[in-house]
Image 1 (tube, rainbow, N blue to C red):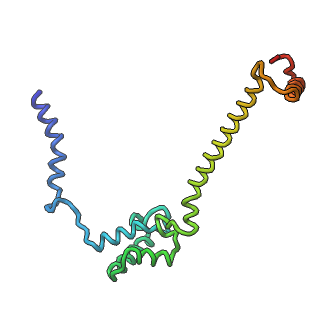
Image 2: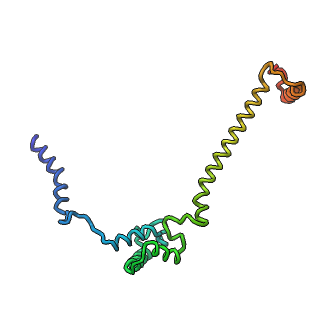
Image 3: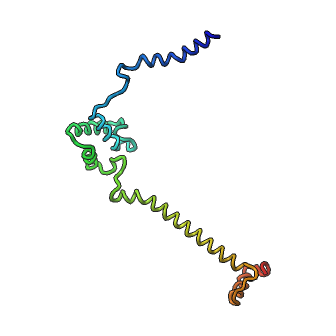
Length: 170
């Protein structure tokens, strides 16, 4: 029984030992230089024009590789992230940005859903309030023994006769 437990523990420890042997001497942490990091940051903020739903950093298309090379060239020339993004926007338009700007017509697109939601809440609240008022007014006319003027009594009697409710509430 002890031999089986020892064998089982050995099987559990074996993958850990193999993994420890494969680890590089520098603790396996990949160190990026500042240039590579800046290229990656800019590439994450730009959309691949071929893939359309992937960033340039994540895409494997030829265009994305060319764009990464172009970003690297501009970083080596000392350009800032904003200058590099402005270059791509001038060539491809605002669509190239993964997160569109919130200015101009795009501002309308950002605000419109919230405005529509707010308008919907307003309309529903107004309708509910109106329904409550109608129910209260109808209920007040149906109270037994209420003193209404003669014209109102005559109107209610006429309406009840026309709808077939003559003797129900009297």
